[in-house]
Length: 117
Image (cartoon, rainbow, N blue to C red; front, side):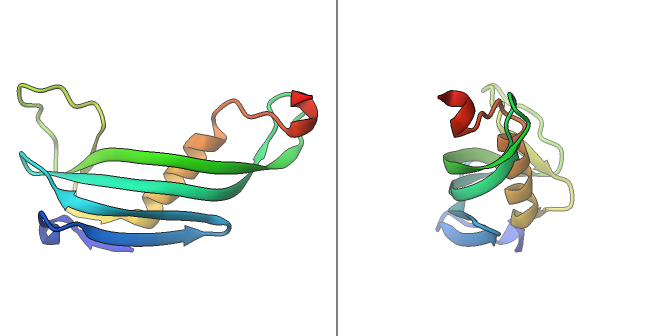
C-alpha cells in the first residue's frame, strides 16, 4: 500500500500489510515540524539462516516499530532525531518498509533451536 504523506493528518491513519506469514499493523499520524510518526507492530514468522550451522529455520517475530517519515530531505532542527526516513516523492510504500524491516531482522545474529541447546 502506498500512501501520500500530504493526506496524513493528526487523526491516526491505520494500515495493515502482510507478507507470507508476517503482519505489519499500525498507524501513521502527523506529529510536528512536517514529520509523520509511523508506529507499528511486526509479528509472525520468517525464514532465516542460522548463523552457526547455516541451516534455514523459522524465526518468531514480535517487534514494536516506531520512527518518523519526512516528505523530502530532512533538515534537523534543534532536536536530534535519528530515526527519520526521507520520502523524496512524498509517498510512503508500506510494503517496501515491511520488506526492509524483515531484511533487517534477518541480518541480525540468529541461531536455530538446535544450536541454542
